[in-house]
Every structure is written in C-alpha cells, then in structure tokens.
Image 1 (cartoon, rainbow, N blue to C red):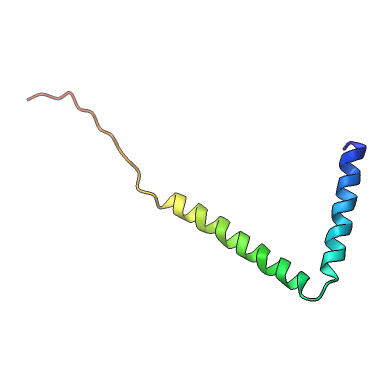
Image 2: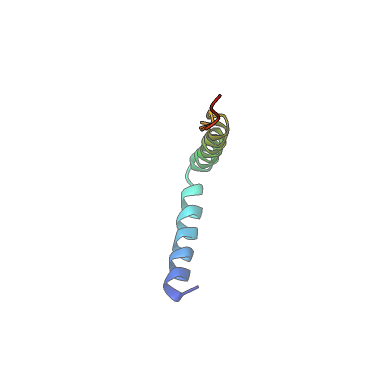
Length: 62
C-alpha cells in the first residue's frame, strides 16, 4: 500500500469513528448496511428468476 493510500485509509477510519460518536449515526449506518445487503440479495434473486430464452433451430424436413 502506498503512503498516500495509507494516509487516506487512516483519515477515513478517523472520519468513520468520529461520525459513529454522533447520536444515532451508528444506528443509521447499521440500518443502511442491512438495506444495502437486502438490495444486493434481491438483485441476485431477480437475476436467477429471469426467464431463459432458448433458441432452437431445426433443419429436420419431413
């Protein structure tokens, strides 16, 4: 990890810790994380239930 990347990560960690100390922010972050996970699982489910198109070409002539 480069020095600038490490510095950004440290600053981000400090920002998150500071935000979590604010009343209600930790709860909000938790709920948002659950919401994001639910959306991801919903997208995965919907991708799995899409109808599959099957193209069949037949050259059988009677």
